[in-house]
Amino acid sequence: MTDVAVIGAGLAGCTAARQLSEIAKIKVYEKSERSGGRIATRFSCVHQFDHGAQFFTARSSEFEDFLTPLVDLGCVARWDGRFAEYDGAQLVRQTEWGSSPPHWVGTPTMSGFVERLSDDLDCVFNVEVARAEKEKDRWVLFDTQGNLLGDYDWIILTAPAPQTHNLLPNEISFKSQVGLIKMLGCYSLMLGYQRAVNLPFDAALVKNANVSWISVNSSKPNRKNFSMLVHSTNRWAEHNMNTDLAEVQGKLFEFTSEILGFNVKSADYVETKRWRFANSVRQTDQPFFLDRDNQVASCGDWCMRGRIEAAFLSAKKLAVELLKDL
Ligand SMILES: Cc1cc2nc3c(=O)[nH]c(=O)nc-3n(C[C@H](O)[C@H](O)[C@H](O)COP(=O)(O)OP(=O)(O)OC[C@H]3O[C@@H](n4cnc5c(N)ncnc54)[C@H](O)[C@@H]3O)c2cc1C
Image (tube, rainbow, N blue to C red; front, top):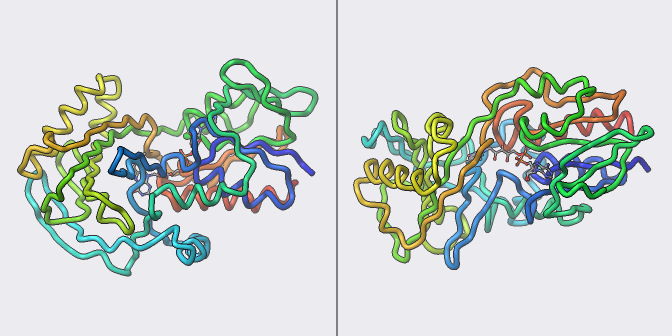
């Protein structure tokens, strides 16, 4: 069997690995302690926060078909939230989310369905691949300490574009194209409360402000204990990417309190996360990258658009193409 190393256990990495596992021997390397990537959930003692992706929609029949068994298993459910739009601090629109289109979330955590997908894969967690070198027609991977991880016929890189670009050796045909893909940062502010706060929405899109999104995380199916999630705009995050995290948190308190009309700093639990590569700016005209001569491929949301469905489709399309080669 062909030996394949997949770098990254986000949705794209897990999808590619599962699609190819019947015809190849796959090993997945993930630098975090669990799978999910930017589909992520963080816990305090009593609260949980989906601090990366918030929800997803399914526009393609391929993604719908993928979701159906996960819905049946209870790993994915509809979030029929009360939706609001703000223009600055002004509430300008309120609607109910229904079935057209459904807004899906992982349950009981956002990342749970990706963890389920990785359950029967050979994943190595807490290992960052730092270097990939070609030796005698085989790919040899090393970790950050220079330890040898293994050697493979093919490697598939699924990390965000700038990280994939850093890992790709110069001779790879698509390296320069990946280098052109810019990804934007974002900050997540997590707010946990002992007592529920009365808000006119479960999910709110905010325009003309430095905050782009405020949601009641605990309004998603099967969540406990009142928690809120705030995202900065990409623009504000990019301008403040190197600002001290405590200062960023102070600013996010200020922006959010102004919109909601009360001081969010009084939350019982607070945490802020910096996402250096949250979303991709550019859509390319190819859903994945492939260098057949060197036996290297790359996929991920950033090949198409910065969305969960795109991560799945990019990996699925790459796997269909690779099935011809392996
Ligand atoms: C704040 C935020 C909000 C978002 N909101 C939404 C939303 O509401 N709806 C939506 O559809 N999408 C949203 N997205 C985008 C969505 O999360 C992504 O499109 C999707 O998760 C991308 O999946 P992926 O597998 O392509 O990449 P990732 O999830 O980034 O997976 C890549 C994996 O590679 C690992 N990795 C990286 N480098 C290495 C290395 N050297 N060695 C080993 N492992 C490595 C990473 O740890 C990660 O697990 C959001 C993202 C963020 C950050």
